[in-house]
Length: 296
Ligand SMILES: NC(=O)c1ccc[n+]([C@@H]2O[C@H](COP(=O)([O-])OP(=O)(O)OC[C@H]3O[C@@H](n4cnc5c(N)ncnc54)[C@H](OP(=O)(O)O)[C@@H]3O)[C@@H](O)[C@H]2O)c1
Image 1 (cartoon, rainbow, N blue to C red):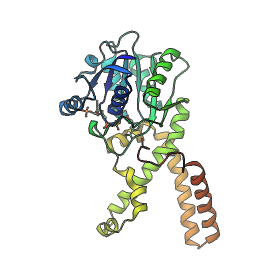
Image 2: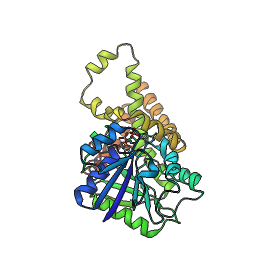
Image 3: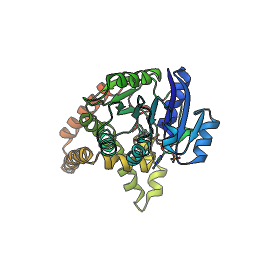
Image 4: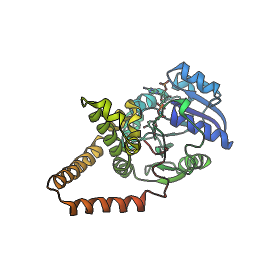
């Protein structure tokens, strides 16, 4: 049982965690924190939090567990704001989509990554933001990746694992660098393709007509381009090395596809499409991947 949970960033990810823990009876009191009073008041009215403080230092006072769910670009300032105000035995964890940058931010602020800080990333989300978009079942049957360091306190890791289990999630652990490499391929690259495609089409002169006649496939493929631009700017910058490599590799794939089409090489096209269909049918269909809770 978490006696007092502080959630810094009461948006989709932080709000959904608060709702899920509340629904499972795993938490007693929830303190929310954010910059906008209107959002915090809304969270209060919705019953997502019990009270709020705009100052992170105040919000974490006496909290036994602190969950940070702000955009990655605000992580370092958030760590700095809570430094010196955490209870000695408080456990801190986060939901940021890139883990290398969070670890680097913690190191920069605290000198070394605190042993009771457990970096984490729920592999669940939607293209909507804010507390209104949060819901208690966001994490049920979804995966959460925790990236503990060799210095992480095993008891803190255990508590954070139990917190996610209370939300109905499955918890996996992974090395920080490996997490960022895997997610650059499975999440960050697809978002770049969606943003890039919609932007390219929007800038065509006849864009009205293009969007008017867009079919279901276009809608499915580009849904994630409605995600929050600030969050995605921060993810790209935080994971720029890995994402840069993936984009480069994918650029070569597109060039190959383009050359194959140009020379009318149907055999090679069939080879590519069959390999892709086979991989998707095998790995994606039936695993739950691809529903509306797969983002970030
Ligand atoms: N959305 C996804 O699909 C998804 C999935 C997995 C992980 N994540 C990660 O989860 C984190 C939160 O994402 P989200 O989707 O929950 O975003 P969100 O719905 O926009 O919520 C973000 C929250 O952080 C606060 N915030 C924004 N900018 C801030 C700043 N500069 N300083 C302090 N607080 C700030 C916002 O409240 P105020 O504006 O009132 O401060 C808001 O409550 C991000 O790190 C993201 O990478 C997202």
